[in-house]
Image (tube, rainbow, N blue to C red; front, side, top):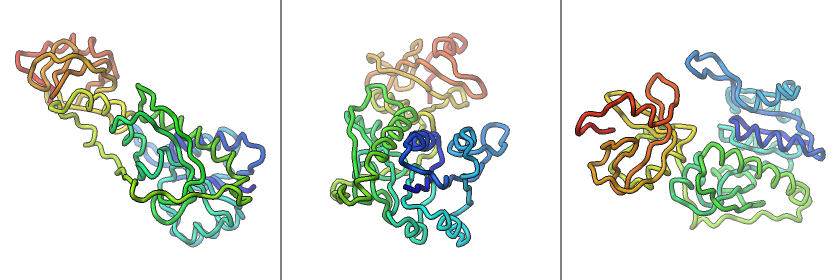
Length: 306
């Protein structure tokens, strides 16, 4: 089975790694986003999928078109003669001319229990909602975002301390295994995709830095979920003495009976209950235990996190 793979971030690299272990599949092309500036140096960095391919000696299979709208790029993909395409967080919607290339279409790994949490931030959405169950869906790609019929689905309990980054990677690995096992029956027609229930569909939006801004008037439970849901990006953060303070880890604590944002040691008053800060990162500094950071602050009476 000749497979063309589309993916970009670290979770997609984990999925590609799993597929490469399946000796029944032949990866004939790896399409990923172009190198982009990253870090403080702003030097161009290859995406994780390209890094993995090059580390495995598969750099010759990598394609990094700026867009799939270019007819010459479409012709390049068609020349690979893929039987099937696999999509794992590629970063661009596939147009109809690209969708028409593989005779068996494309299978997309989506880290949620579709039709819930369509869109670009499904794991974040599930953590914020406090879901007790999560999972991964394999769908046949259609022009509508994440609306294609479900080929296979895996359910699992939501880990109590789930963080978006680590859970997303785990779901993509599980999704790659699920997909590899379903390719043969899918192509043979014995695994029939089932339409999604549109009445149950929910949607997530592309995350913005401002989404991570903490409002201490919210319940501590919601803020604790934010800390985990926005890891590794955009990260939960607030303002302290005019500069941003990242809250990297925290846990629920009993109410300290103070105005939201007031600090008592490493405890912060919230709209209900309190949040105990465990790991923070002040502006321009490395991450540090919250009690070490607090030792050097000495908050004045009435001073608050904003």
